[in-house]
Length: 510
Image 1 (spheres, one colour):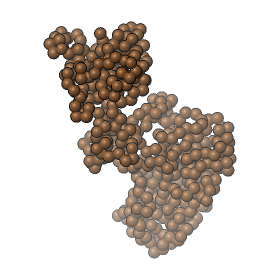
Image 2 (cartoon, one colour):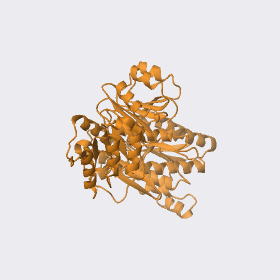
Image 3 (cartoon, one colour):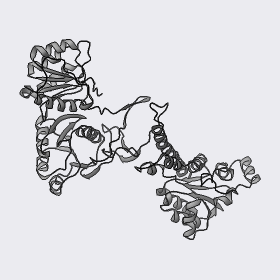
């Protein structure tokens, strides 16, 4: 008779699976809670202690770590020496293992979880059995996912055995599962130990969506979600309407969210190719969007809009007349939804703006490696402000400088933002030299540059940017400072009566 070992934390479908196995000629061995559940449903079960000839001890910490279990799992059935050793030690082979693990991830998601509770939910015996069975998958069927129960039963029923290809697929899923399980534990323990820059890092993500393609149609792509990741994110958002999100949509939506989260007052952010093309704030969401639209009414075409208030009817009437890829907001009123869902293809996405905003690290893959860094969450209130020029900013200029400074850190370097008190006027992004970025931003601002503020993501290596800003009518500049030629820029600002603010912090974004 074939033997199956069942030991699961998630009991979904396990009774039906066990009954199906019994019908195809298996005897069932089980442990603890799984054994109790199966027995309560009238399924004959052999207790694990009958196999090991040893009781479960230490509150169940030790029950399956035994040669009678792992010998039965690891023996090669085409090796006479292995079969002789099984017979010599009275070990019966185990032909199927169905195990899922202690709910470690669910446990650490609890807001009041203690380290002791978390550590107690680190499964040892389960992963060991899974790995033993998966290693010997040529002879052992191993199941870790309830979604595979039906296909396994079907193959046993039709063929008396699971195919070699399916066994290999199930084994591969096991190793992915145990690797992901260990990655979550590793991350938790590393944080608990307060270690930075550990000697190795293991990341795990769960498939959220298979994408039609990547940045271009010839590139394959998928969208994965970080377990226990920030709920204030596209990955944890809900799509209410529209076409499936694309690779570029997701990147742009993430960029828009990172910008709009920096604003407390009603704000609207328009993003194109991961750069903001317009940012506006106001007393109402409609006012904020109008300013974001007016900041660059050309580039917003086909863009992504992020809004930090519920979308109302007034705002939706403005949005519906523009071709947009995505609108992201905390929520939409019914009237607003009625207006916007009339547009077949527009994607409407809600994100929990009150959700957890973890200080996750940013990872960037390179050929043969990975770069890991903290997110740039450095805000104006954390800056070391100094004013090296003769003139200090006026109250209105301070408001414009702060808005520009919030936006410029989200613009690809070299980056320059020209802004007023409530909106951006011009944005220069991704240029190879700083004055080139300034010229783009100033040209876009046009006459609005007169009396406006200019923000730079890094210091001025020479005074040419200040000269260009002054000639365009800029009256206040904010930049990190720190160049060996700062004095040249300060003198040039004083020459034109510009108020300049140093923050002491750079905001490069590549």
